[in-house]
Length: 137
Image 1 (cartoon, helix red, strand yellow):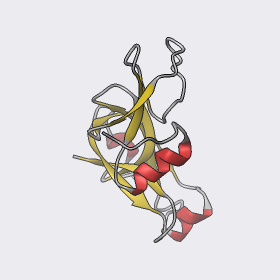
Image 2 (cartoon, one colour; image 1 turned 60 degrees about the vertical axis):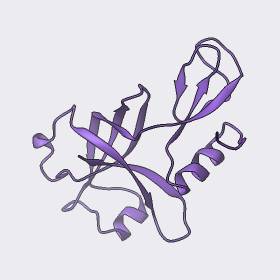
Image 3 (spheres, helix red, strand yellow; image 1 turned 180 degrees about the horizontal axis):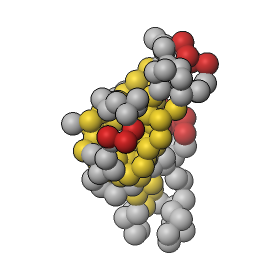
């Protein structure tokens, strides 16, 4: 059982720093939310619980980014070396966005929707916030 935490973005990012991809689930109707919600949009219940996702899913949509935020330029990404971001549909059902790794962003025509992916946890720099990425399996 997971310790009690608020169903908010701060808790979500703390879990990511612990290398856990967590969703909130409504105890009444079982609807899953990622990022977490404190109130169920389906039945309007507020009795939520944390659930750890397996971290496996399939690519639902993606885009190659050639001009990104400054930290991606520092990571070496630019017009000649784009990176991928996308939406991943997890095996449990929720969809989540994140960086996509292990696929060639320079040849997006070769990337297929439906590609199997597994979660990775990336830090921008040591001590900075962890974020979600997915890698081709």
